[in-house]
Structures are given as C-alpha cells and as structure tokens.
Length: 241
Length: 270
Image 1 (spheres, rainbow over the protein chains, first blue to last red):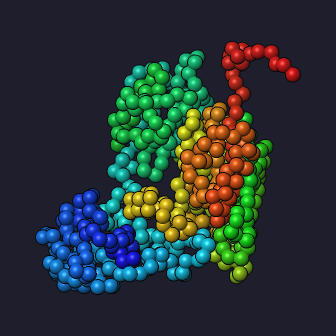
Image 2: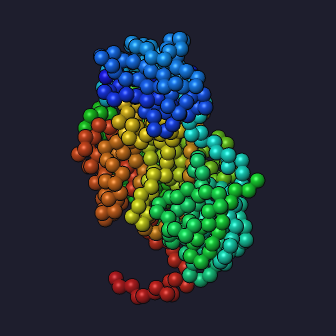
Image 3: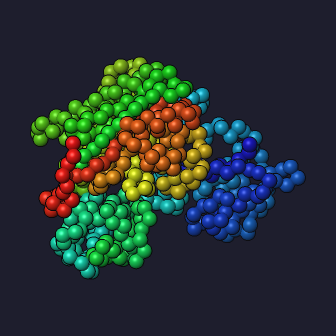
C-alpha cells in the first residue's frame, strides 16, 4: 500500500497510508499529518488521488510547500518524491509492502518470528531529539525545576507543610508515611503520591482520596493548586520555586 | 507484609528455546524475572546470568552493608531500591563483559524486572519490556514503562496506543541489560496494602493476553500459583508465540498492631 512518511532530519516520525480520501497536512490537530511547528499553517497542504495520479496541493499556506526543493501550488507526485513543509519532509512511498520497516530503524529484514532486538542508542537519540524539535509534547515540563509541596489546610498531621522529595510519598499513619496522619483509626496507608517521568500521580491506599472534591478513579495526575482530600485531611498540592 | 508467591515459565508454542527465567526468594522477599535476547541459546545465558547476579548482589548486601554500590545512587528512593538498581547495574556489566569475551555471544542481552519487599514498601526496578502490574481494590495499573521503541513513541506522542499495538516494531527495545557497557535503570516504589496483587511478567504474556483478561484472572484465582498457571495457559491458548513467564504475588495481612489485635481477637480453633 502507498503511504506518506513524515520525517524530521531524516528520522521518521509518522506514516500515513494513502487511501481514497485526501490526507491533510497542517498545524491544527485535526489534520491527518499534524506538524506542531509555528512555520506550518493550520491547514497547510493536502495530498489526494485525482484521475489515478497522486497530487499535492498547497492550501495557500504562509510559508509554502516545496516539492523536491521547488515551491509548488499544485503538483503531481511520484514514488520517492519529497514534500518539504517547514523543516519537515514528507516522503511519498508508493505501492510498497507496508511490512517493510522504515529506513534507519531496522537494518536487517524482519525475522519470521519477531526476534527481540535492541535499537542502537544513537538512532534512538536521533529519533527522540527529532520528535522534541518538532515541537511534539516534550517530556520536560516547566514544573520540573520547581519543588512540589503539600500544604495542610485542615486535619491532624505532624507538619503543616511538606516538600515532596522522593518518588513515593505516603499519606497515612504508617512509619513510612511522609505525611503522618494522627488519630487512632487512621489507616496505615490512606493514599500515596508517585513521581512519574511526566509528573506526580495520586493513587488510593485504604481510602479513595478526592481531588478538588471528586473521588479519584485510578492513578490521577496532580496539577498545580489541586486540593487533595483524604478522610478529614485537606492538602493543597503546589509547585514552589 | 505476608507475601504469597507463585511463578511459572513456559516455552510457548513457537520458540525452540526458553530464554526467559525467573527466581522467587521468599526469605528475602525478592522476585526477579528476565527475558533474554540474542541468537542461538545466548538469550538464555544472558537472562540466567542477569537473574543470578541480581540475587547474589542483593543477598550479599543483606549480609554486609559494605557491599559496593554499582551505578549512581538516587536520594529520591530508599536504600533498598537503590540496592536493587545497583544489582541491575552489576548484572549489566556481567552480561556485557561475558558477551565481549565470547565472540559468538556478542549482542546478547536481557530485559529484567525485579521486586523487593521490605515491610510495606515495594521496591521495583526494571530495564526493557518485561512489566510489573499492581492490582488493588479491583483495578489494575501497569507500574513499569516499557523501554521499547513503540512505547517510547507513544509516550512522546508520535504514535497512538492503537498504532503501537498494530506495529511490527514491538520487538525493538530501547534499553536492555548487557548490550552496552552501562544501562539506565528505572525504579519505582509503592506502599503495599493487604489484598494487593503484584504481577511480574515477560512480553510473552502481555502480547497474548489483554490487560482486562490478566486482571480478571488475578481476581478469580484462589492462590498465587493458581493465578500464575492460568495466566501462562491463557498466553499459550492465545497463540504462545513467545516464551511466557509470570510471577504472581499476593499481599496478606501485615502483623497487626496490639490495639487491632485486641479489637479483633477471637479464639483460634485448630
């Protein structure tokens, strides 16, 4: 099946099969190929089949669409053509077996029983740098350099404010609790906060905690300013400088 | 906490060698699972060496606090969790050096997922696409993030989970034990509760059995060993294209406080 392959600095980011409906390219999220980069217009270009030929059409974009380095408004495409939009390249790959892996990701043909293999670290780095440069959701959040804290609003705890320094923060009566709840019937582990790569997540313990008044369902990501309620204790989750 | 453990590994229906291996050390409450890679029987060598190294290092550390730490320590995690990561760093070095000195084993490696329980604290460390799941109060969460190409692409938003499931790139790992001179180890900690179930498994399970099927099997099995047997059977019934290995842990009541003991005290019969 024919397809379009979105690449950034020669690293493949996404591939889209070419069917009967047009493939739209642009910055808006409802495009088939979304490129989150300011140099790209919301609805930048589209690729479709007309009278048996594959055609690229620029949708009056600000910065233009380039076919093999020539600015085009509308042009016929052939296998191997490269459409350049901003700094991204879209390769036309016609009538190839879809099971053929992308260039640069695998050097050997796919084995019959998929053997586990390891991606070369350099290739991996290239791929993810490209993804980050493309303005895709980066793993680094601005909150990262700031310290998360819990401030006690009501309830009986051993401190009024806590800095979250570890990967695991237990709220409860347990010896391992960071936020020690007082009182005879408080559970050992009422709730817990886990640090993940992309932020802090609240999970249940022997109690189901609430965030901003709503009981959580499963692990729930904490946002700056969220109010956590565990039993009679209310805490505010805040990032501080 | 009282931990009841069960485990099983199986060749599956397609492979000629079982490159998975696991170990349950109930006295240390240390549980390790590894899935080897590399042609011929070398994956087997890698996974066995990795598991053995982790066990030996952790046992040594239990006996002597002077046991050296491999890799960097993190202040964000407990001493135990740092020790578990250290064990995997050492395993990485051993597998890498073994492969380097035996040309025919070059490129061998392994995934690893290890759980160590001390009191209520669960320490977890992993490399690769072997996973840990926690089932609590009827809902199951995956505690580990796969170090595979498709999973990393999903995390940075360039692939949807559906595209990842359909991808032919599922066997491409981004990290493994023993394929490089050093490795980055992911760690996590959880506070365990009575009634929790923990599952460690190789991708031979998760590619064949869906998460809801896994959760319901864990929920409806009487004992850990029973759950482990049923999970492996499911993977084989669904195709068994890879080796499949699971460790199931059930968390029992912790030794209750004197107050609660008095409150709930009743005479034992038998």
